[in-house]
Length: 293
Image 1 (cartoon, helix red, strand yellow):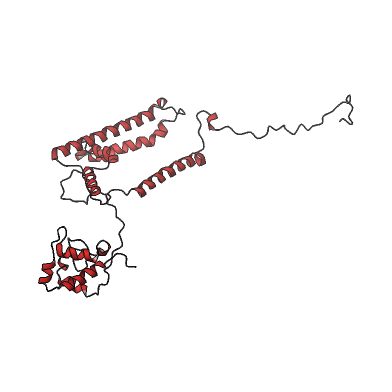
Image 2 (cartoon, rainbow, N blue to C red):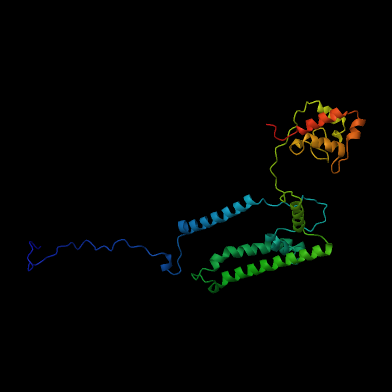
């Protein structure tokens, strides 16, 4: 071991051969460094699948909240309609109509063929044990996948084509077309196009129901069209009529009529109602407002 600062002094290094020289922190290689291997299912792969599932679920929730699902017409066993499942069941619907999947062969079609199909899916991991991940080098898996897709596309197209021909032969209009036309008509009329439950508006109460004008209302035969609760029976509701008409305007409607309503002065006078009572009635109706605060 050296002492001092002489340049010609021999330097001797003393070390321990039992201590290995370290290379610092070595980052382990990922799974791509090992051909044919994959990442750990738990937690790596499972976490990725869970995150994708959450994104898809949130998307479905946004769609269901923003636009309620339309409902079809009420079930009518006497209606002459052609039954049709949803689009994602069309291939099964057509498959069950095949000669060897229905009638005398219904057991074969429902249990036999489907059992073979699901059995093949269960056996795929045991039949295809290769490490190759390219689809064109995995003949068993790729063949089953392509065969399934071709069958679904063919059966779906056959089911829809047959359904369209049945509609044309019977002169019927598809239900989804009827609902679309009704939605356009309701939209043009200013009505809600969705058949989902709409928020109910707060009912307007009768203002001063014990007023003597209520008896005049009944005596003047107004009750025949506008009902005892003022909600109307085919005629406009008088609840809240004071929001849109003044006393003078109501008197003018009684004397001259409006729209389909004829003048009511003669009918009221024939029932024994005086002009002063009609004035009192008009004043009471003008007080019927939705907000009396």
